[in-house]
Length: 342
Image (cartoon, rainbow, N blue to C red; front, side, top):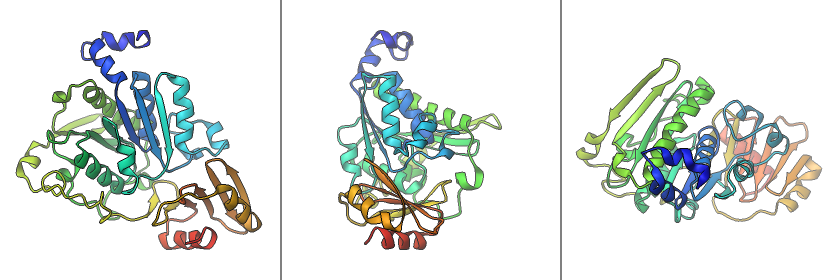
């Protein structure tokens, strides 16, 4: 416990709190900007196990704000979950790191949440957040939502049965074009660091057994203006009628809502996923694609650029593909069908 001495000296944790941290198991969904700060902070704090689920690979444009990665990870074309795990194990070898190169879907979320004490939101889209909210409320697992765009962000800790859930705040997903994205507004590193740090503070309270310190509030911060607001949300839950935590209906968890294709924020890319899960032989796929263009492969993915094409396909073992060079879902699905199959 000597490595955590300064943390133990803090009255809010102490030895009892640190011991509970060492017994805790956390799922971090997404390991990009917010997720990489969350993952590093929790591993340094001494959680017992950190499970990382991320569908993407490290890109040069990530390095401005995604603190776990460097140019070597870009050169090796590593999935973020694998690159993150490599770094985190060097930071704290006592923590069990469990990387999953996978999309979080209604088919996979139950297994990913199994046995964890807390879920951390490191995602960049509301569809996945609504799925997490369904899964967390259904299983009774606390989770900490956050989002960050430009210089501002928001944080909301959700404890089932104690606080309102995300659907209390937002009954429906924002419509296309109705909210800012990192494509339209950009994002600066300090905003990411502060928002993720607020998430980790809430995580330390929950994991150390002090859920009574979690208040039903949405924290909204703008680091450029230097403003912070805390919006009380208890009235939302008292009003009742929430589809998720009130009526206990989970359409995203049951697959009644949500799509299998999504435009990736700030990447000029679309992720396409098969409607059924399965394992793809990356070796066989690389050999099959080789006559049609430039192929690079490692144990985690195949990267393929068709001859005379501006597009690039990165294919993972679960059958997902990230098609770079377009934000058109129909075009991305067409390229997927042409080179990978149905």
